[in-house]
Amino acid sequence: MKTIKQITDELAGKSKLLHDIFEEAGEDMDMSKVKSLSGDSAAKVEAIKALNKELDDLGKEKEKAQEMEATRKNANSIHEKLNTHSEVLDTKQVATKAERKTIGELFIESKAMEYRNLDRKVDVDVKTLFQTSAGWDPEATRISRVELYPARAITVVDYIPMFTTNMDTIKYMKESTFTNNAAEASAGGVYGEAALAYTETSDEVEKIAVWLPCTDEQLEDVPGIADLLNQRLTYMLKARLDTAILTGSGSTPALMGTLSLASLQTQALGSDSIPDAVYKAMTLVRATGFAEPSVCFFHPNDWQTVRLLTTADGIYIFGSPQEPGVDRIWGVPVCQTTAETENTAVVGDYRGYSALYVKRGIGFSVTNSHSTDFIYGKQAIRADMRCSMVHFRDTAFCEVTGI
Figure (cartoon, rainbow, N blue to C red):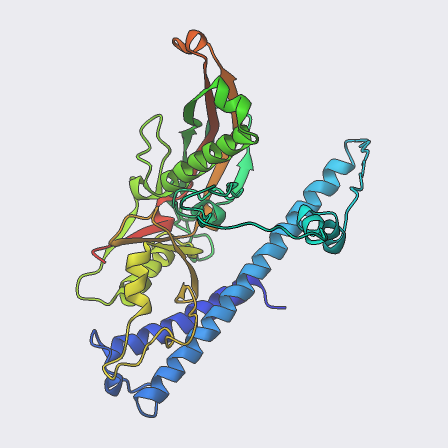
């Protein structure tokens, strides 16, 4: 099995090869200008697809290797805990088996079958047609489905390592000075003097909160309404967190989002194609931030432009319309989300240099003592959570502008 470093090196090499091909094709994607590949335009596009597929496979292989490494570390952690603490779990499981009837049995017992078996004739002189519009409108029972308001999926937080904390501030030391004067020295020669300095850095644990007023009658009369409200309030908090990870201002009580980092790197689109600009942003992450990009966040409208890229002959570069396509660029996973600001993209090493610290998960409280709620028969349902979004190395992230 390849090591993570071997896979990373192979990814970098193939990404560079693909980048050079696009450089040859130019902004108009003219495959006739590509000299590093042989064949006609269709053959060259197929070669590009094959290379992109290799990048995709390598990306997946790297993710599996990283997951295995994380599993190993977690197993070691659990092993250490089990050898220092003794816990006894006493669980009881109660299973109840409900009586069920077949569809046939239910039909035989139904009123419809009872009326069907009546053996009698009714002699009626019908002078007025008895119908719905002039008679009895049949009873209609509302189905149980509740169609929720359209809202985006929660996806950004899935790419952020998550930890628990009991602190109100996440503090850590950051190496602010690194002077490496290591050099070859002759016998009896002077050694180069190095310099190191460290600065304490902190990110506050902030609160994300929301509340909803509701009448006593609504809570009492509608089965399951409390669970529905809790579910929707939970989504509201997660959606806000998902957005804040990327766009939070960092000014208390706001979380620090990637786009607000003081030393965030920037790559303008300029005259480049979007894939070229993204590759240059990845190069900045690697060459300046000394990190390896783990995800690239795109607004769906911007990723659409990439997905529909064609050569001068009209051949789709990221796969034909018959193919589902791969949400990856230069071997790095792409997350499409409206939490990302349109006309920009963010690429960075979130796996290695970011973390979401959660002090308290989502909690709910209900009270009728808010304002005049008690005398008006209303209750206030509130939900909140406390967490801190930390970016350990600003230069491990880069924003692509002007898309």
